[in-house]
Length: 270
Ligand code: SF4
Image 1 (cartoon, helix red, strand yellow):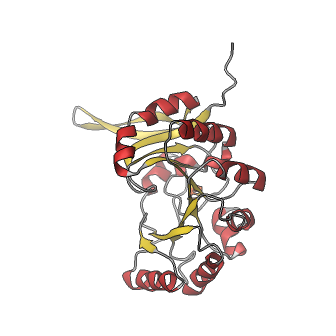
Image 2 (cartoon, protein in one colour):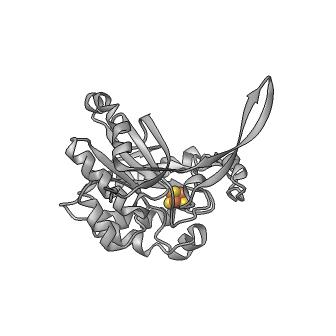
């Protein structure tokens, strides 16, 4: 009998990850994202289709270029088999599984199947999301996860649209719809020079989060580190337009201070 299980297009599965939620985790990277953030560190996750990327390897002391396909279709059970290999590490470290991307909410049937399978196995789950999905998909999915890593960018819709290609309406509406029955939330704010590195804009984000304080476990500030240009080139894409980095110490200290005064547990980095 043919399987009716949805398949998911995945571009990476990273074991022993320590930056995508609590403890030691396996992170599953979904391919496809509705946003086009100019600073995206995972440009291979943006297209919802398989792609060719140019890689190099050294053969007999000489570098050779070759083509590789990015994105592979998996059934939920195939992914679960990989996740279960590290159960002992999750249990010892208070870790689990993180679904990232790309945007996991773009493949809602596969994602929800994965969340239910993980729940049955007693695995802690987190979803790393921009929140850009319909309310119906968002509400159905958040019921099935323990944690959200919610990427928040700016409250200014005009700036948001010009740097990501999408309005921020869905992301803000879904975030504000979370109540005390929902999953724990870690807010992740990329700090990008020339995009949201103005203190006034960060104050607006801090004020927006005030109503959600009970659900927000922590605010992570993620300074732009200017990496990933090579990936863009290898995919035939234009590289990010930003120069420098967002980790200017003085500015980051002022941001940490801002969110700490707002009553948040705040941390630099993921
Ligand atoms: S939301 Fe994340 S994955 Fe999607 S384009 Fe932006 S940075 Fe990249």
